[in-house]
Image 1 (spheres, rainbow, N blue to C red):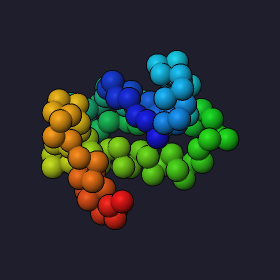
Image 2 (tube, rainbow, N blue to C red):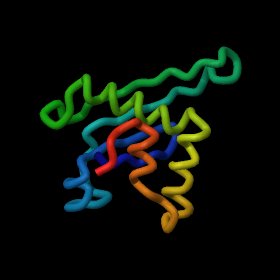
Image 3 (spheres, helix red, strand yellow):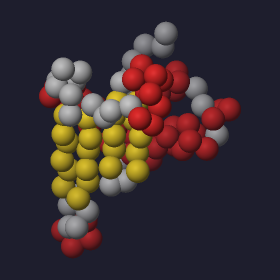
Image 4 (cartoon, rainbow, N blue to C red):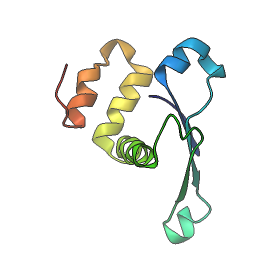
Length: 105
């Protein structure tokens, strides 16, 4: 999966589709954050829409949502996001796998 984040939106597409079509790749899954109650009620509403059910199940979409949020809501994991975006020469994908407690390849 390839994810683009421009809050309040998160957009997911298949990596192969992104490689083939770039920014013209169709989204498989979109997430929107509604922040209207963030300050007054300390609550952000989230809506996820699976665009291509043939490419992504609801269970897979939920897993993507939980995993993506875990990198944006956890300071230690967010450092990996920052490193990926700002210090690409220091970024190691194995660090992401380690954060997710997945075996390295």
